Structures are given as structure tokens and as C-alpha cells.
Image 1 (cartoon, rainbow, N blue to C red):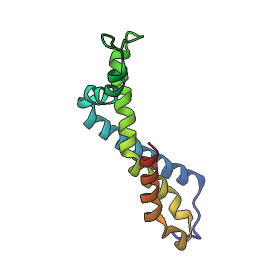
Image 2 (image 1 turned 90 degrees about the horizontal axis):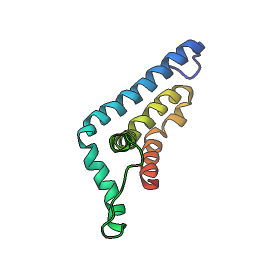
Image 3 (image 1 turned 180 degrees about the vertical axis):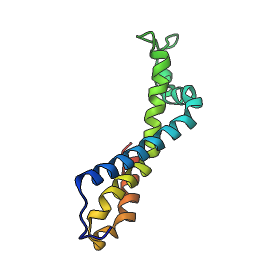
Image 4 (image 1 turned 120 degrees about the vertical axis):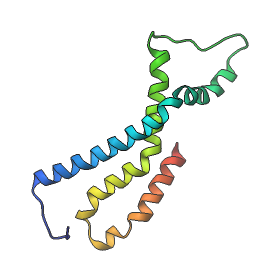
Length: 122
């Protein structure tokens, strides 16, 4: 799409829906790949806390379903964490057509630096 072209609101909403679905599908694919390892991921994250507990004590669940949902929630957060480059690209792909050519040239440095800074902040 050229810079001077305009689109009606509905086509923008359709494009936004497509981009959001791409993000959701990416996160779900990564989640499906990591779901088998959810307990291992939980153990990896909980290991430093367990090491700091007094001798003879253990972590306890405060809810009936927390022993099931906590590893699943953690795996979902890790899935979003891993999918951040794709999510940032989808955001950029939605915004880029509205920008001038000299502004669009910043796409690659912006995507790489955004991903790097996100992972650095985590």
C-alpha cells in the first residue's frame, strides 16, 4: 500500500484482526510445543526458591487446582516470552503501511533492539 492510499475503517479492523490472530496462533503453537515440559519449566523456576527454604520444609499449594494450573500458567508466560519477536513484528507490520519510506527503513533495527531490550529487561 502506498503512503497516500487510504483505507476504510473496516479494512483496518480486518487487518488488525489478522495480525492479532497471527500473534495468538504463534503463542499457541509455542505453548503446544512447551506443554509437555510444563512441570520441568516449573521445577527450573522453583529450584532457587526451594534451595532457600529451611531444611525439612517444602512448598505447599494453597488451592486445590494450583498444583495443576501453576505450571500451565508459567508455560503460557514462557510461550509469550518466546513469541515476543513475532508479536513485535506483527505490530510493526500493522503500523508500517502508514509510515513514510524513510521511517520504514528503521524496521529491522527497531525490531532487533526491541526484542533485545525486552529480553534484557526480563
